[in-house]
Length: 294
Image 1 (cartoon, rainbow, N blue to C red):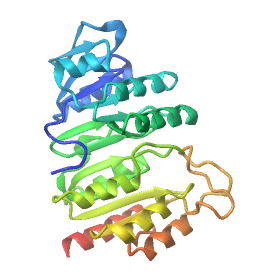
Image 2 (tube, rainbow, N blue to C red; image 1 turned 120 degrees about the horizontal axis):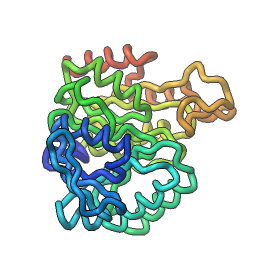
Image 3 (tube, helix red, strand yellow; image 1 turned 60 degrees about the vertical axis):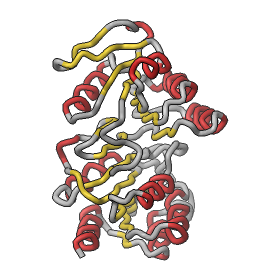
Image 4 (cartoon, rainbow, N blue to C red; image 1 turned 90 degrees about the horizontal axis):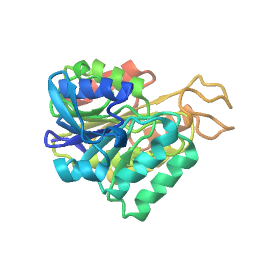
């Protein structure tokens, strides 16, 4: 099976007609994703030829859903328009909204995250500032390269897009049920814990790899959750052991303040919950390989 995204998912792309939206729509289609439409109010009613596939463009997410039965939207709109795009998707009650855009103001994310809750959390938001998610051989919603991995029985949840790609490549011979890039901003929608529970409930996932990074306490909270609720083996990696205090590293949320949010503290919390933690991405991949191969 897979989590959040399957071969039956019908995907629309908000911002499809922009340069980034079009580039990745092309890649998603090439990997077998069922892209059924784009959204751009200025180009509503037109059709775009994407490498031989005619993709209709709609004025709103609601119109696209009514015409295509879409259940996933991937959002590529510029940061200053992202809040409105996500709120539109939430108001349309699309089940999954994948927010790729980086540089979204934290206040804007807080607004649409709260809006999703006020609407009963009918829309799962992944991101912002994330690579999206992929269920290899089934569907790909975002910017994860489809050709670096294969279908298998490892579940991956990661704050880092780059480390998502590396882990998928290093374990490509074993393969993944799904890989979810949740993003590294201070406020995000779907969390490590959400993905951990989904993989726990997925009968086709045998092992979970969790990648975190410095800053915040998400990994410590995930460790506590693993200890209480996750029975499948979990392998972890925390990026940022050499990061200097007080300096943002890569993601907006990756910053250590005093003793809070250090890689060492996160590693210790995960190990206390029974998670095997690698010192490097490659060691983490080796630990996962050893566990799943017995």
